[in-house]
Length: 369
Image (cartoon, rainbow, N blue to C red; front, side):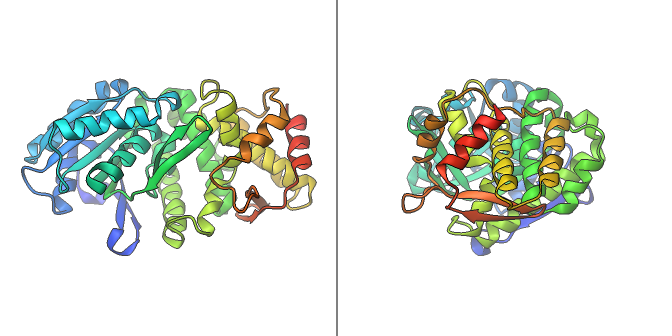
């Protein structure tokens, strides 16, 4: 594979900057990619993955690293939000100790967003911080979770309450790994792609509307898939560069997430995939925005049609609205006791608000049940 086949999106954070590299079959060249970053023979690399992903792609990655002269070991952890806990991160720390990882060593996360979050957090906290490379294998991780340096685990009180910012040295996106991704997981990832269209990329939104089917990688076709990966990664990178630590603008990436996280927490992370919950959060916020006159009902309907085209859920379950509101009150995005919401104003434009009433949220939940 030559470099002309790769799409490179810079995340220009100065000394902490890196690239998102997109290319079919690039998993076979991960060793060369690390060499280009200046890593030499003998480097200790711990590959963290889950059994299913490792079965399909672990040998490719391990052999690519070994052929470049690196000393490679692996650890398999079960994926899924219910496993995204401090206890699982402790297992990664134990592997770091067992394999004698040093400050110059590296963790490579091979898997979806859960594996990436946990491996990234382990890297951030082992020896006060070692390097991590993200090799995402789900659509959601490729366009969102692997980019931006957010790492962490869940707490019984809410999602991602324990974590750290720890930027990767590289994000290596191989679209071929999507061939083994379950269709439901692909559809969940499309929620994040649609999100980017709503919050800032109207051209991306238009491309999604022009597509006949958004429910699988096969339906999209290779050309459109690569374009969606590139545009989504570029959108995420631009926001991260503008606000690395989420002190302001980066919060717009949380469109649909505040209510979505509450939905995940209240259903025990066993009913909805993350992207499905985000889709329902976007639907609720779109409903609130249209009823409050912040954006047009026609735009809400366009968002709904894209969700349906991607096979995403459109209706909330019969949860107690008071429980949803209480859960949101403990969200990590609360500032000075007020819940911050990302509210759409027009396609490609959103704003951060903390004046959405509890009653309006309850009305949205009841309307969408």
